[in-house]
Every structure is written in structure tokens, then in C-alpha cells.
Image (tube, rainbow, N blue to C red; front, side, top):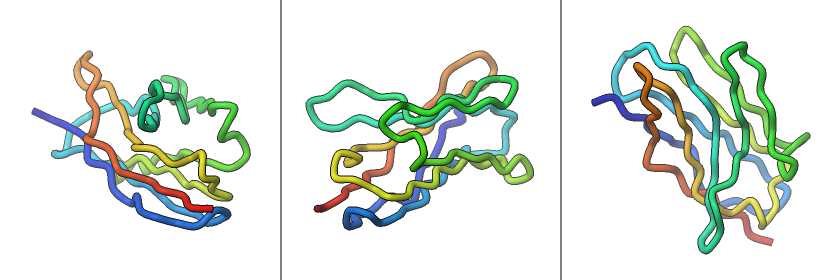
Length: 114
């Protein structure tokens, strides 16, 4: 079964940057639907929603700092995160639609220290 694999998380100081990557476990025709995050004790939050026409909308808390992009040749999804804040600390997940089903990765941890 196809699933997603996130990478690129880590620990960084406030003001720093990280770039997350997301790739399918096997070569498959998938449609990425976005990046999400969840901090301990909090609900899952939309970081970036990707629509079928390619439009990307960002959560208010990350607008102007985060940028999602796709490499269609490699079938990868990325999230460039700049000016990171301690409140960005969370597990980050990518999501996609594959043959009508929503699929997710296991997440990659991002920790931002002040």
C-alpha cells in the first residue's frame, strides 16, 4: 500500500529555517493535498492546503514564512519554513489523495527553541 514518507525535520533555534520533504513510498500517481501539523495536546492544524488547480493556501500562523512547493518530475512535495518560532514546534505531516483515498505519512518532528 502506498504511503508517504516525510523527512527534513529537526531542532533549530528561533529565526532559523528548515525544509521538509515528502515522497511516496513507491512511484504512484498521487495528488498532494497539503501539509499539516500537530503539537502535543493541540488539534491538528492546516499549514498549507493544496487544491486541484494547484492553488496553495496557508494557515494564518505561517503566512509569509512558509512556502509549499511540488516537484512534479520527482513526485515530491516540499515545505520551506523560514523565520521559525517556538510555537511552530510540532509533528509535521504531508497528505495526499491516491485512487480516491486520503493517505498520510508518519510525520517528521520540528522543534524550535527560543
